[in-house]
Amino acid sequence: MPNTFGGLTGFQWVIFGAALAVIGGGIGSAMGITYIANVAAGILTEDPDKFGALLPLIAIPGTQGIYGFITGILVMTVMKPGAGWSVLSGYSGLLIFFACLPVAFNCLVSAIYQGLTASGAAGMVAKRTEDAGKALILPALVETYAVLSLITTIIMLIVAIKPTITV
Amino acid sequence: MSRSAIYEGPKSGHGSRGRAPAGPGRAYGLLARYRRYRGPLENLKVTREPAKYGYAVGRIKVREMGLLNSQRLGRLIEADFDEALHILEEADYGDYLKGSRVASDVDAGLMRFLQDLYELLREITPAGSHIAEFLLDRYDFHNLKVLLKQRCCGEQNEGPMLDLGTLDPEALRVALENPAKLPQHLVGPVLEVLALPEITSQWVDTVVDRHFFEHRLVLAREEHSGFMEEFARTSLDLANIKILLRAKNLGKDAGFLERALAEGGRMGKVWMAALVTQPAEEMLRALGGSRYAAGLLQFLGVEDEQIRLTDYDKRADDLMMAQLHQARRIAVGVEPILGYIRGRENDVAVLRIILMGKLHNLSPEAIERHVRRLYVDKERL
Image (cartoon, rainbow over all chains, first blue to last red; front, side, top):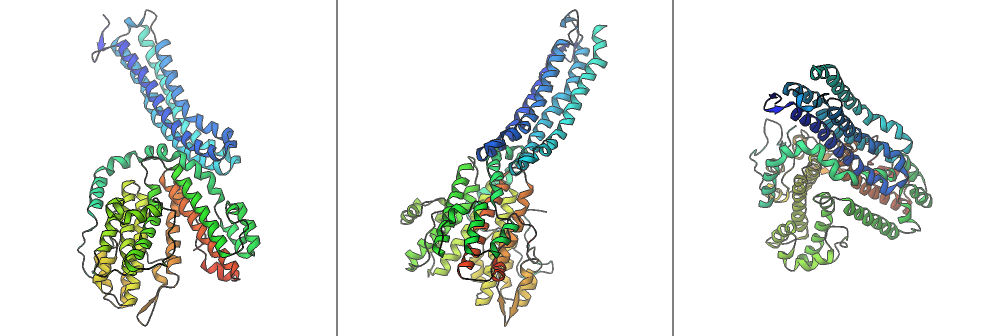
């Protein structure tokens, strides 16, 4: 029987963390895309020719969902001990769970705010299609912090946690 | 700044300070509900508004390009009538005014434009939003005034009813025969007018206008929009100030004002009513401590105890437009919609002034003096 931490086995902690990362990123992206897609739908109703200029703005809040998905895949495949999940201690599982949190929370919030920023930027495109490049820069700045959270999560998983599960 | 702050004059005190809004019971119920839920709803506003109004804002962001701007306005003022019609083709108004030759053509064209504008508003307004009602209700109240004057005062020449509101004018005429069939917000003014000891045209205007301003404030609160509430309060205050100034010129007493002034503005009703007993200079000085001193009240003068109201309407409109400019800083929400529709209505008023001026051979300078501030122009005023 593997030891537990807080009543959960290492595998249960890992599942918890991976699920949280995917859920956080997914919810954030879904909300962010909804916001910008609503505005874009209104603009495209009036001027369908702006589809190409608006598409990057609509897509950009979707990246956080991808980061959450990457984290989930990473945790469930790369983090799996050679002897199987049953050898993973509860404490090690807890560390993996904590490593998932930067992506889970940061991607949830940043995707929502990126959608809001993109909605404002879409107003620029509505008036001047040639400003689409400038408009994309604004929500892209919000992306920085989602990327940083993904990098942090990966570093935490690989540098800090991987050695503990191979002992 | 507290939203419930009521200006009742400087601390030294003028007249009664006791205030307790005594509006309709329904308004109180809604207000209490609004206050109870406002905290959590306000917290969610940042994410609620884009989902609710995103589509509508997208539609109007594109159409905002057709609004009048200062450059077009300058060309319009300098142009002759035919050139002006040609310039307007750049700003969405051309199709409506094409071929206009006389004043009735211009009026009909602008009316068709407003009908299409309000059709767009109804189309893009999301379910559960009060913005269309907030913007169009005034036509219902206008039609109600026309009908009440025809019925109670025997007046037949109070101008036509306008088919621009939320209610069909003919349906309103039928419903007026049985006030129980009227929408809830129109029952109050009708019953109040019918209960007057002597029904005059002036009292019909006074009572219906008061109910209109109070109802619009209730709608703004139901929408949970601080911007709409501020807009409703400011327009209510400006209407109250105008009533007060005209009452002073006509020698009315405080009792009249307590029945005529609307509740819910930034300036206390009881305090305002008490001002009418003071000399005109004193009254203007007391009002000068309010937020409306700059840009409006400072331009009013007194001559033989009569307050000159020249330009009051224009300056009040400009003040409202200055407030609406803040809507342009909000990316998504009910605010840009309110700003756009009011901006278009303002454009229509400006176009009417310009084109009628051209038809009557007024000089560009004379026309410019009457032109209102534009929604997309921050430089004027």
